[in-house]
Length: 137
Image 1 (cartoon, helix red, strand yellow):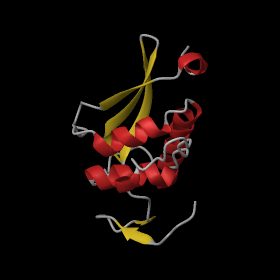
Image 2 (image 1 turned 90 degrees about the vertical axis):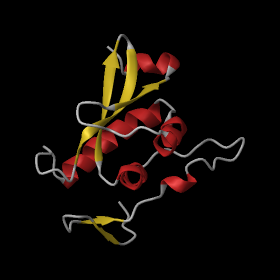
Image 3 (image 1 turned 180 degrees about the vertical axis):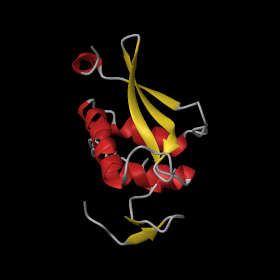
Image 4 (image 1 turned 90 degrees about the horizontal axis):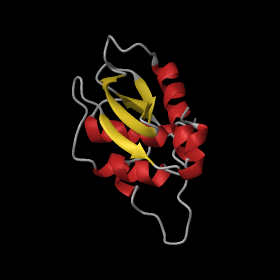
C-alpha cells in the first residue's frame, strides 16, 4: 500500500493517510466507478466515525449484507492487529468489488446518518444478481 504520510491516532499508532469520503460521490456519467481500496474504505470509516470499525459480510435468508460492526481496531479488546485488520478489510472489499457494488458502498458510507453502536451494526443489503450465488451458499 502506498503511504502518503503518517497520521497519529489517539494511541500514537502511525497509519498512512487515506482517501477522504468527501469526493466519493464524484462519478462521471458513463464511466465505470473505480474499485474500492483498503485505504479508501478505512479512511472513510475513520473520517465518519473517528474509529476503524470492523466490516463483516453476513448472509441472511439468501441475501448478502455488508455490516459495519461496533468493534473497532483501536479497542484494547479488538481481536486483530493492524495488519490482520487491513487483510480482513481487503477480503471484504474484494467481494464488494466483484459484485460491482463499490459505488453503492462508497455512497452509503459517505451518507448514512447512523453510526455503529454496541450490539447494533449498520447494515447495507448488497445487490449482485446472478453473481450473488457465488457468495451465498
